[in-house]
Image (tube, rainbow, N blue to C red; front, side):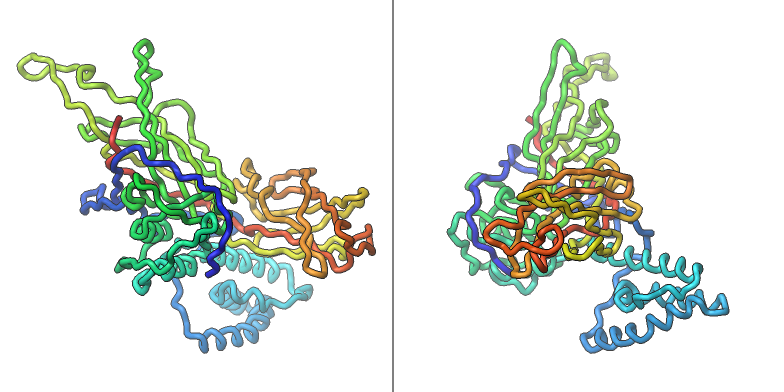
Length: 501
């Protein structure tokens, strides 16, 4: 793992106002025991359905030895062309068996599909298209499986960060402001495998460290020394899927002249793995429910249908609040006991539990598209995404490169959540390796399945050789980096023991 060293802004993460926040696993809520550590969502409870590809089984496959992998690759190289030819076999049984063999071979078989398939019949091409969608589904599901980190062999901070980075692909900046952290600090490794956020929080608690989200990016978290009044990260948070939720502020407002305007708002900081920025993150208000420690139900306010949470690839966290109705005080409860005296219930001191659901689209693995600028209508298709150069226009001293991006069966990914497309990394790489970032872009087409974006570049700066079509530098290519598939993801969350003001 590369522990980057760079200057970062010393901006602390929000401080927890409540002295102690606890969350239990969902099984505890159903009477199977409780823990103060906020653990949510066994992997089996995560509800996912694929966008752009049909769902398939998500049973984990065993990991073969290296020799077996090499043998399997060699077998696929020989078998896949034969199975594809058998998609046109005279007997229907043979065609079905060939289709099943290709599906069972999985995404690794895709690289062995012959380039020229014009000889296949229409029926065989349709079968192959179904198979390729199954491969895409399998590949995307594998990419989006929850990160599981094993820290049993980690003895130091450096060992632990290395293990977390290897499992998740997330890097860590351990030199905030130029002062490197002590990576030799001893830790007590957990005895069981944990998710990304819980494993990281466990390590940070033991080494008195925290996270500066503002100094990170789409694949890096910056670690900083912890402030003295910072509570335990594990005890302050709940974990659900790829998310970490931490209540930070509880605000109660009672409007005496208009009780319906009274409210109880919970400010929540939600974090996700930096390399898995969710798209269109929402929380349905109707799914919110809770209970106070005096057994009074806590209900959401009736305004609005969803809570829209802003997300960006450059910041692995966001903040929102849960709008709840302010509970009545004991003298407002009313009612009489058996003796006819006014019945007084005890005032609540904390939110016993509050639950809801997080809905979003999760992007798959980021891939690199390389499109030569000197090739007319250059195009590249990876998984469910196709990126094409539609035009190159010279406008002294700049060049406009028009790029078309299409996503198969885009669904909600392009309905109203196109911002992730505009945040993708796009630049021109010259033959000598020099990189030219774009100066801005303009969207010239939007459809249900894709977008057309014109990027402006200055390709002649610094004495770069210019020539060829549209005075383009010879050997230059457009680099486009993007996730190539998305998956619908719904996970419930549960927060317990939040003190009231």
